[in-house]
Length: 344
View 1 (cartoon, rainbow, N blue to C red):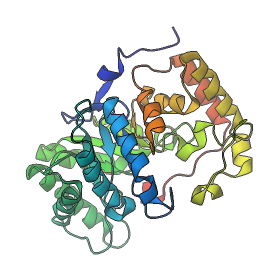
View 2: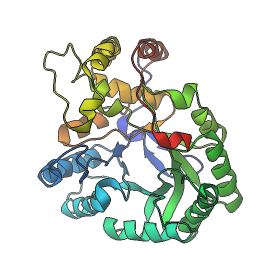
View 3: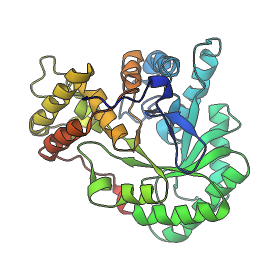
């Protein structure tokens, strides 16, 4: 059979790392909700109603793992999640969201206490007393970074011990940092859920080059994959041969050059062929490949249609043969640039 079934979307779940957190096998990233940076939209207020419909559709479909951060929209993403929860309060067919947010190691944050302090501010924006998962968004860097990173891990322990989160995690950590964090959290009895990293068919460095995914698996940590569709590249809607090709707006236009789009056509075609077998889209195949590799992807969803697409990734898996075909095609495509954090 070409499909490795996982029973049903409702039972397609993953327990994150050493925690007791059971989440939908794909989550969703709320980076674009309330975006005031201009990266995803120049009208976040105008997009609010569509984002709300995405939120409701996700929870109605069983996608309960929602990832945000204090820096997304400079706090607006977290505030919108509180507003969306209030707006949807009367709807009884929605599952409860499992919220994850992140601490930013920005200048003038030096101490362990800065971490729970930041989480308390996030909780006020989210309208919550506790989040499911709290993470360090990237490693501190520059002068005194090693000491800061040690204190930030201590701060994550304090967040858990004070009952502000059900589990802790990290993001953009290299293999050595994952090992260091795992040792610290194990010593303190703090559940280590995840390392959130960039990972997709066109960015496999954590798996093939840097040993990050191996380190995660070695220490029982779940890799959470951001940009699983390479910021839209793997949807096929920008493909040079697409009949209804869409134009790329905003900063991504500098990444999605015509030559890069053309050089990705072979991979898009393979994604389409695999999708045709399962009755799904290239985007859903790209996300499902990440799931089949043992990660929990968090694609974006800006409206109800995209939310339904995310939900449609649950309940099935690409086969081993399909994975090999996808990876062979991906090897011929241009690689996505990695995040600079990974080298800090």
